[in-house]
Image (tube, rainbow, N blue to C red; front, side, top):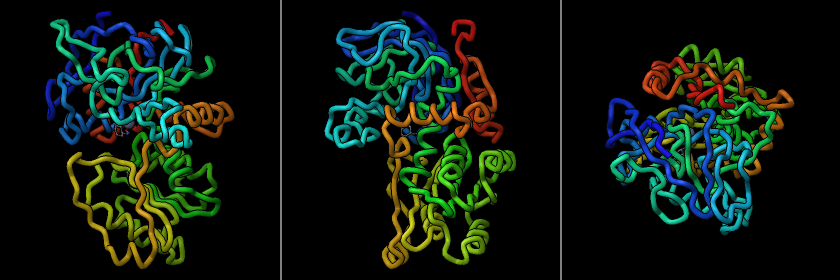
Length: 377
Ligand code: CXF
Ligand code: ZN
């Protein structure tokens, strides 16, 4: 099927280019989905800056979406035509060793997340009209109105959930919420610091709030984002981690934070030092955001880390598998304990994607969302 997609021709581009592409029919174990919406996550911006680089270009971005299944390949058992699904950036096959252990956010199918290729055969499901392969972000490539993906990348959801809101569960909501609740292990009465209030950090704020945190300090240089954080449950705000040191010290009577979550758009090695200084004795600093993919430098006081028994912890998809977390959080949405509608600060057409990313860079968006052919769903 011929459609249009937002791609980059090579790493380090000024913007997305809309080109015609051909999307293949599903192979065995795959499904085709007509998307209702896709979120504009900062991780796709890493493709433009070259922080994340793939083998195959053109490369189609997008890793957070929802839509309706239009075709299923042979042997697909999880979903059928007409089902509403979220496209999760982490696949979950259910049978590999990590999935079998209950670590579905670490599914072995995720090994190809940054390969640009399809799960089943390492091939490509998207091509240019000349027949050249097009790589896809996170086994998905949601910057097109249709995708053909492996069934392990889709999670069926109930039809009463608006698809444009459900799309946010494919990355930002699950990643942010779980980083506070599951990976951070926020408990009632905790002091939590969330650094970086974008589409992920804002959900760490609401996750920490739902878990009963006593103090939630939202750190972001942008005033609008700090205000948004308060709407989502932050009790205090700061412009920088340096500014947060004194405040967190006061609020915790010197014990510092129980959970620190680093979810800035770009996390650099030098950010770990203040992150860990904000973290209390025996407590945890969670790294969620990404930086330049080959970077290996990190500033850490080994003395402080060891002597104060702190944990420096990575997190992907918030530490919970998409098949568990997506339905679970949608129940919370229905119950009114998860805000989704309020996360969407602006909507765009696919052709306006560069405006969407500019708005993100300008600090105007919590989550920008591309809406595909609204009349169809
Ligand atoms: C990222 C994680 C690494 C691959 C791209 C997506 N997570 C959230 O945006
Ligand atoms: Zn993302």
